[in-house]
Image (cartoon, rainbow, N blue to C red):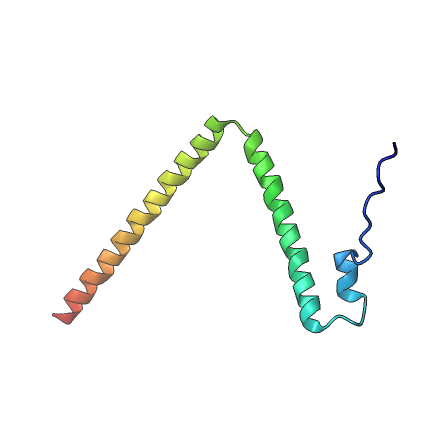
Length: 95
């Protein structure tokens, strides 16, 4: 018994061709299609990045996260010290 033919979608076109193609599209429709193209590109990039991360050994990721945590902690401490210094300067100037 032969398998049924694959369904064809007559209304389905290449999105990028549709954006610039038919004059029947409104500006809003073109903008929406352009956003979908950008979204697809972003999702493809995310998928690639997630594939790379899933192949990376967990130990390597943890070590990089520890380094990032130390740097973030240092920046936070320096920011707090700067704010404290500014507050003290304001108090001295007000006196």
